[in-house]
Image (cartoon, rainbow over all chains, first blue to last red; front, side, top):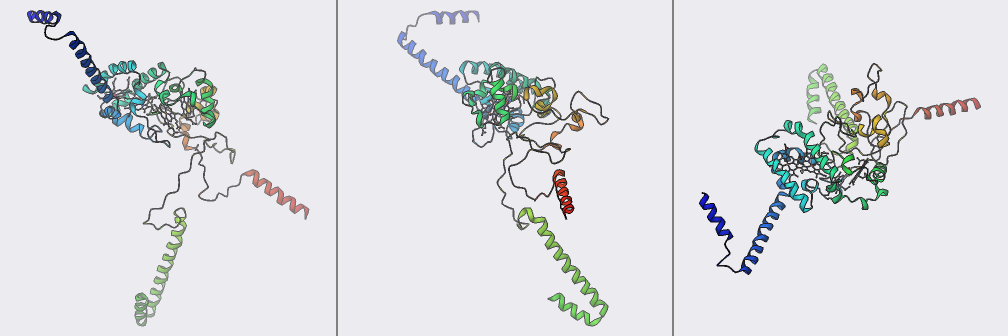
Length: 195
Length: 175
């Protein structure tokens, strides 16, 4: 075993005798593109709603609940899918989120939330993770679709424009502070600020 | 036709039989009439659409969302909701209404506080939180639709009644 490793190392260290430097550089470049592309494609696949709801925990609970809300069906016909609200679109954030998401696959393997009751039991914890994330990124995902700069207060309801032109405009609050439960049922809100 | 024929033939046989049948057919006639008029009364909201036909539904009216308070028709009336409440969750876990209308939320929300009676239990003691018997807001408070009434409302509030009475008295005194 030890010999094998040493031999491998030597092979890797030895300059190439058969291939030109140019070939190696270009070849490496092409291989890099292929791997990077594959990685990207894998991310694209996992960035779809079909992927999310391929797990019944996600389909039976969040997805079913989403169906009755404005983000599923509305007058404008624009739909928000799971990744629109849950996975940042920026590259670096995207990878960071994927790393965190692999812990969910763990959850699937060990069946942490495979019934409605278990999901309800965990909901407060999961929701709090999401609130913290959205609070920290100033509700980035909401703002990807709802741009404050283009909000027309005059065509909003009085309640909405009053709240949006004060604490939202001043940056004191962000979307998720006031719009918790916009897409799913809420957990027991005992002790949550503002409830 | 067959019924009246048979009635006649049997009538020849006995008089008492005849009166029984007459009563019976009269009864049948009346009950059919009654069903017809009844059917019409019940069917008003269906615009006389036959029972086996599905009525073409009307366009769904929009919920009024102007945030303008409506006059109450009598002092004890639960005020109606002047805004949308679509998907507002009110169950054992949360009460979305109270996230704006609770006493300790009204500074941020600038919404009216729920009546102080909502904090009282049935013995009249004040609680820190909304009383369980007032918890489900939509039992008494409802949003309004931008639409015509399906049935004409003849309700008059007491101011109107009092004014009418005074007018009548005045008219009488002048005579």
